[in-house]
Each structure stands twice: as structure tokens, then as C-alpha cells.
Amino acid sequence: MSDPISRLDQFRADTPGAPMKSAAEVRRRGDQIRRRQRVLVTAGAAALAAVVAGPIIFLSAGFGERANDPTPAPQPSETPGTITPSPSGSAGPSTLTRAGLPVAKDLVAPLEASWVETETYDGEGSDAYNPCLTTTLGESAAEAAFRRDFAIGPSLNAEADDYGMMTAVVAEFRSPEAAEDIRADLSTAAAACTPLDATPAGSLPVAGGVISRGDINVVTYVSDEPGANARPEVATAVVVAEDRVLVLTRQRGAKEQVSPEFLQTSLQTSAVNAAHRMAGAEPPAPPESPASSGSSGSPGSSPATSSPGSSAPAAILSDAHLVAAGSLPGLPMEGESSAVWQQIAPQSTPTLYCQGAWLSSLKAAESVSREFRLENGGSQLGKVNVTVLEFATKPAADAAYGTVQGWLDACPASMHNAKLFIARPVESIETGTTPGVDRAAQALAEYAGDCGGEDCDATWYDHQTVAQLGTRLVLVTHAEAGGPCPPTRACPPEEASDYIEWDNRVAQTVQAAVGRAVEDLS
Image 1 (cartoon, rainbow, N blue to C red):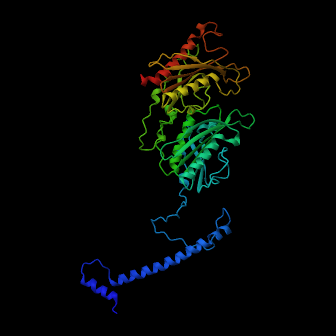
Image 2 (image 1 turned 180 degrees about the horizontal axis):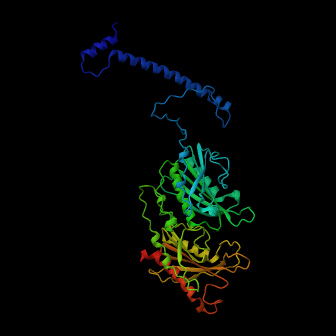
Image 3 (image 1 turned 60 degrees about the horizontal axis):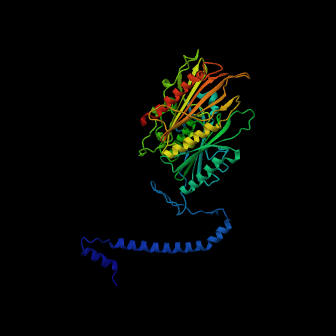
């Protein structure tokens, strides 16, 4: 019998242009197919053996353990530029590195200070970085984790202890779902902080850009150190970006019952920036420095809370809604009339002395703040704090007004070494601004000043005001130093007319602050 391959060659030669392979190529192709069939048969037999032996191997390894193959099969070599897929149903090796940790410039520092890096770890380190969390990310099945610690730079000197330290930990999990489960558990633990028997001080959402979900929870607790006059504070931001989790912790000694708005919003911005770094994205452009602008910034308007190229609505509030120093009334008292109001950088004090929680708890869409001080010869004579809040809806603003009015009525402020405190009843007031304010209330708190010694009779007389116009709230503090009498012409004041100048100064401050806050609505 003639060779069929020879006849194929003859047919191919007689059919010019036909898309046919040569006889030799066809022969090689047939040999290749036969070899593949033998390989598949062999592989099928091996797979069947593995199925039969599988239970025996599993039980010999023990629950929760992986059987170690003393002679592991060689791994297939990779061609440069290709990726070997991981087995179906399991995650590949972690791609998280130290580059996923924030750097100092990502973190917003208070006043004129800056954060500096102090230590970086592969893993979570040997010491606890957050006293509220009882489970580490490693114990939560993180596939990789890294940590970096920060401290306030030397520019604040003795005040640095007031701002404490910051720790950032990033971790990668097997899936976005696993990462979200861990975020929820950590956030719950941070809000309760049961190991410290802590008191919740406020919460704040974190969103924007690469972030899947995130929030900040802050607690305070009583210090065990003798003579301590501050409540230690733990602020914990837990943020998810796909399958990665960021835990940003700030610990400090809070001298006030509530946390300053600037520190609150700065932590939010820091968390957004750190989340971008964790996800391998460039953090958003930094916002204008609060120290230079005098504004605390706003969760809803900060550039750091919006992803590049996003179509977020333009901010409503700005510095233009905040009163200027030149609009505040001077003191006509003898020896004090030459004092001039000065705008200062945000301080570690709440906007209102009787403020019962973070202003973030009011859930405003935007917020801007400013602070002023009046000094004469090194003595502080007056202070004015102003915050303007914009809400998404009128009912939300109504509810916030009721909350603030409740604060003024009950005045839950902590009183360290107080010698005098009177929370006057809340009174409705007229602001005389255009457009007219829907409603406004005011309370007077008296508390001891700090002049040293047992016989110190310095007293702060602090008028606190909340005014509402539609979806906007304006909070104003006008405080003057006095003692033993109020800051009036007569000491002690005996007639109603003795209070007129003082009342007029307070009214001028409130009217100027509210008028500036709502002039765009006229």
C-alpha cells in the first residue's frame, strides 16, 4: 500500500494556492496530538488518585493545619511580563508594601506644627498602637500589614503633648468583603473602647476618592496618673479601599470635654490622604492651611475629601461667611480701650463653652470656623469664637438647633478647678440682620479665670448664641474677663442701665457674625 502521506504531497502539488500544510508538518501534528492524549490520560488517573486519597491526607494533617509536602512539585516558570494566575477560589500573594503607608506630608498637623515619622515596621509592631482594639489585623487574617508611627515636630515645644502621637497601620485581606467585615468590627470596638471604660466623644464619616467606606470614632477616659487635669483621648479612623484596611490612630491629652473642630476635620483629611496612599493613588491636593486662613475647613468642602476629577457640588460656605476682626467691638473700659481684636489660629477649645459634643455630631454638610482674642499688656480680656454650619435639609438644621439649644440649657461642660459657674437660662434674642433670622437663643455662663493663687477672683462672662436661618446655623461666643464684677461700668452694677454697654457689645458681635454668615442669602 502506498504511503498516504506521499499521496497527500502529490495532491498538494497538483493544487497550487491551496492552504495546506506539507506532509512532514501534518505528521508532526499527528505525533503531537497523540502525545497530548497520553498526557491527559495520565493526568486524569493522577487526579482520580488524588480524589480518593484526599480525605486521608486531610485527616492526617489535622483540622486548621496545612499538610506539608516534603517534595513540593516544581512551580512553572514565568515568562517576563506575564502573570501566573492564582488557583481558582484563592487570593494571590499580597502586593501591599511599605509604600502603602502614609508619609508625614499626608497628615494635617495643628497650628504651625508638622508631623514627623518616628518608626516604620513590617507588621504591626510589638506594642499596642490603639488601646481600644483587642484584636490585631494579623489575628483577623490579614495577608500583609505594615505600620508607621508619627509625632508632632519640635515647633510646638511644650505644647506638643496636647497633640500626642499618630499611628498608621495598613493591611491587605483576601477580598473586599473580608476587608469590610474587619472594618465594621474595628469601628465598633473603637466606638465602645471597652478596655478603657471610655466615654464616646463623637464620630465622623470618611469618604471620597478611592475609599469604599470609613469612619472616625473618638472616646475619652479618666487618666490613672495622679494629678492629671486632662482626659486622654483616642481617635480611631478605620477606612477600607477595596481589599485594604487603614487604621489611623491619634492619641492625645484633651484639656476640654469635647475635641476641637480643627483637630476633628484635620484627622478626617489625614485619613483620606492615607487611604489614597494605601491604594497606590496620589493623595488629593492639600487644602489651604487653616493656620493662614483662620478657617477650620469643612468635611463637605475640603479638597481632600473629593476624588480628582469628581463632579462633587461646589462648596457653599467659605471664609467670606466669617466675621472679620475689624467688625468686633472694642472695650471702652479705662486702660483697655486701646486693645485690638486679633484673629488667631484655631485653638484646642470648643466653639461654645457649653458645647456637649463635637459639632460633627450635628451632621452638617459644611462647616467653617474662626477665632479671635483681645489682649492688653499680656492679659487676655476677651475671646470670640464663630462657627457657621450648613445643612442638607431644613429638618436637619431644625434638629441641630434643638440640640445646641439643649447644650446651652444644660451646659455639660467640664469644670476643672472651677470656682464659679452659672448657666443662665436660654433666652430668645433679636439679631436685627437682613434677611431676618428664623430663631435665635443665648445663654450666659460664668466660670473661673486663670490668674493663679487661692485669692484669684478672675471670672469669664461668656455669652453663647445659636441662630438659625433656613438650613444654616451660626454659633457665636462672646466672652469678656471680669472679676469680682462683670465687665460693666459700675462695680457692682446696681441699675439696669449699668449693663447697657456690655449688652451692646455682645449684641454687636452677634449681629456682625450672623450678618456676615447670611449675607449671601439676602
